[in-house]
Length: 288
Image (cartoon, rainbow, N blue to C red; front, top):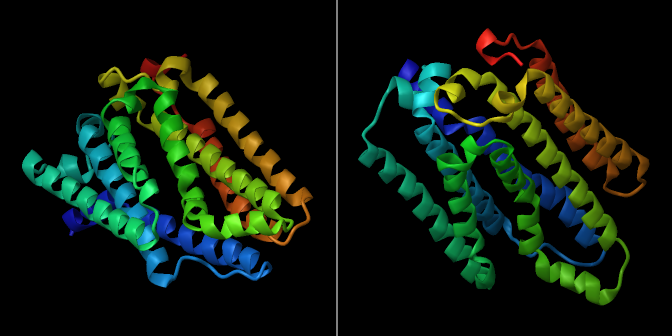
């Protein structure tokens, strides 16, 4: 039973469901009403949207598992209950699973690129999968650069739908109707919310994993700057999130309520991260 639960946590099902849901929320609560008011329908049909979301889920899952693989020695100190620590598996079996995820995702990417006539965007798949591997293998141990890379990847998710609906957007530009700048402004705002909230989360994880990171000479922000500066940085991030939320509240457009709702969840999550950092008990080894 414990092994099953650990394997489930290893797969991060809640995170993956959230990634999948993001596509449906943006497509049907943002793009569909926006295009409908301009006499346009969605370019993506139901199965294409599902496949795009599934492809992103597979990339995210591959990123999670390769990250856990490279973190085994650190997790042995910080989180010995983690699946790959508590139940070691042979490298050959692990890489068969990992490469299988990558190939499944690539197959979906190729199918969608052909189906939507978007072969020119196929390069995004190897770039993202290589980025997730490079983060896990190297950049994660290099401090805030790794935190920024993974947060940028999260923030880019809504823009995959922009690429998918590009022909519709070109039609809007050609018709010279209003509202395109409003759409992009809100997308930039929500991407910034996603970036900043994930960055706060990454900094919190670094603080929680300090003991194991120190054993492997990782240069996390927490280890290099200390608790006080980490708190300040997370506090600045939360203030920036609140500022973006106020900015969205000050706007009067058809999509404001949607973004305010999503933004509120993001801000509350980040505020909780700040609270956790403030309450942390840091061992003497990691004092400032």
